[in-house]
Amino acid sequence: MKVIIIGMWNSFPKGMEPTSGYLIQKDGTSILLDAGSGVAASIQKYTSIHDIDHIFLSHYHHDHAGDIEAFMLARKMARQLRRTERNLKIYGPESGTIVKTIRRAKYSTFMPVRATKNYTVGPFQVEFHRNEHPVETYAIRVTDNEGGVFVHTSDSSYRGSLVRFAFGADVLVIDCKLYEGFDGRAEGHMNAEYAGRLASKSDAQMTILANLPHHGELEVLLDSAKQHPVNVIKLAEAGMKIEI
Ligand SMILES: [Zn+2]
Image (tube, rainbow, N blue to C red; front, top):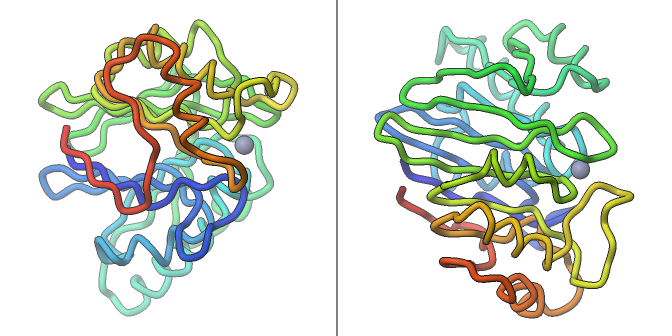
């Protein structure tokens, strides 16, 4: 599979670089994980917005789902212009005010996400892990038909179950907006030290730190994570392309 990081900033876009969004493609099928603010614009550098039929939302915080209505409006227009016959499938947690809007939309279909439910989309098998975060939130594991594995933790504090969920990933994206020394447990986030611990214990081949903070020196974030023995670890960049 090919993964393109559309955006990876925490809270709000940085200049023209969006918040959370990961485009995954294989054998003519495209899926998008998260649709944070700025993603609907930037994704058009890589593909037509009308070619995205499946969007998985980890949760409904703005930096992960703020652009979902832009994608829904794009699909409405594409249907009215008869560019496609397909509805946009939006997979996400069942608790959230946006769910009612998605369910009511004529050209979008809501698909509930639960830890016990898997979905198959083209060559991809998609699984979920319930995170520790103030709202219902899921980590997402995508396995392709050749055994390649991509995992995005989304927002969560550190959990042993997340280590097991991410175990053996070819690429593990860890949302990590906190520098070492900040305790993110109350608000359901990992700091850089815990991100490194997760990368190490899950034995991911490559770890990418994302949901990055706007302040401070990001290299410090990376160095904190590297205090644990990890394979390869780097900071996410908008436009980064990865082949798995
Ligand atoms: Zn969140």
